[in-house]
Image (cartoon, rainbow, N blue to C red; front, side, top):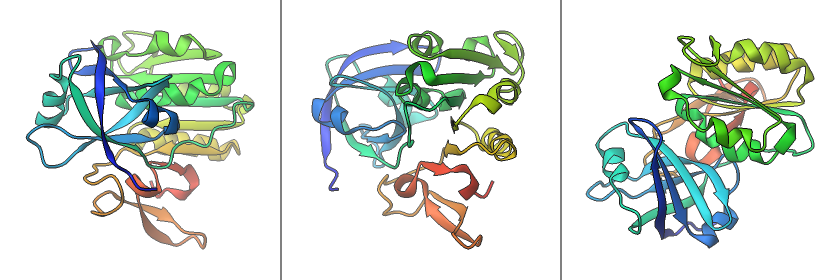
Length: 252
């Protein structure tokens, strides 16, 4: 597939926390093509490299992006005004393979929560959602998940909201009833989720967070170690071969 850069109008903008912003971009053509778990490459004025941002949701002709300010580029992006155009390349990457008829546990950690929204939405009441955050002030999108998911659990590292602890604790309680696990977040979290999934013989897909420059596999800057079909280590690229991988394929 040939990917072309397209302008999208910013039609809605909300600030969810001190550093996290919620954008709705209007582009019917790109919205219809976008699958759960894919991402976009956003052009930031005055910056050479585009910024990769996971797709949070798709609703009609709207693509929803929820991102965190992590540097000068995303800070510039956060200052975009409603009505202005944002140039993106989309949809990119390999998303989640979701069966809406299977009971699936969707797990997000921190800024890995947004891409799980559209993914869980595909399963509706068959979606069991577990999202983890540092503290109460970092909690986002809880009400969005509750609109369609069968259940939504929130954990916080410091116990200031929801369950005190990590996402793996509620996961252990419900994993035996699951038919699939999908997760996105920090690598240590994904490693522990993959371990629980393997112990319970549950298929698991993980979306990896990696620094990307081109987004299409040309610069080779987002290489990640994986096992090939013979159990030997090799490398794949998160932007082109992922960001979603089968958990047992990833070298944690």
